[in-house]
Image: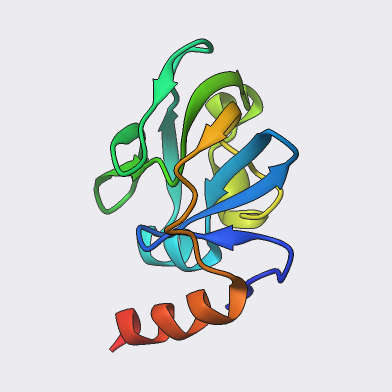
Length: 126
């Protein structure tokens, strides 16, 4: 599994790339591997509010539909529209296939660095 050092991670297996007051959010390599081949992505509307710990999107794989939980609070500034037509990009490049860009980011205290997330993910595999 790959866990880039420059990102932060949530216990629900989302990654966060902080860019000042903004953040990109996506699914981790661990998450996409556990989900299997993704066939559909449902993303929120720009302007919508995200609350840490609450579902903001869902992804459908050949196995099941799974909620995506917000690792931070803020406002959706942009969605990655390319994923609507090509959800498999999450499987192919999970750290490039971001889901949403969020502005006014708050509630990021629970996020883990790569080392802590790696250790957490290892406990999830067992």
